[in-house]
Amino acid sequence: MRILALDTCLPACSAAVLDRTGILASASEAMVKGHQERLATMVREVMQAAGLAFDDLDRIGVTVGPGSFTGLRVGVAFAKGLSAALGKPCVGVGTLEALAGERPGLTVAAVDARREQVYVQAFRDGEALMEPAALRIADAIAAIRALGTPETLAGSGAALLTAAFPNAAAAPSQVPDPVVVARLAARSQMAARPIYLRAPDAKLPAA
Image (cartoon, rainbow, N blue to C red; front, side, top):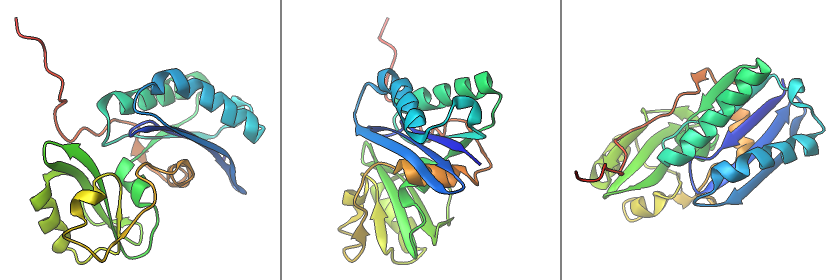
């Protein structure tokens, strides 16, 4: 199976191509804005590096959140458009699952959601122990403690949980590894539909 995987949910734009032999090509660039302008070019570059035509793909995978409202919509819209154009299936990968990866033991993936909240999800040996949730930091800590003591904290929200779990190791990256996204997409049955855990921060101007 040849898979193109995309991620634009957090402060990076990433793409990877996977087949049965492993990762053929991948790229990731840090950015807070500009995903829409960079994504198509990056996808073309990784496909060329992988030595594949778009028709060679069997599946497209994309992170679906939680994360930046604008960023995740960019990735999902692009993936669905490519899926429709190629007649290939498109699947979703949770951002928190991608951050946790397939690490052994209890891993907590957390993204700083601001307003004293985190988007959080816990995994044991790669298996989800809870649904992704937007929780106040104190509530997130309580939910995690009910599951055990985490070995690893992953994501930008890890720093907000470190004081409660000082013995947990911190994952090196605060954004999903596109290689991990591709591996998860290979077995995902999730629809490529954005995961919104709360209303957007933007508000309509007053009349």
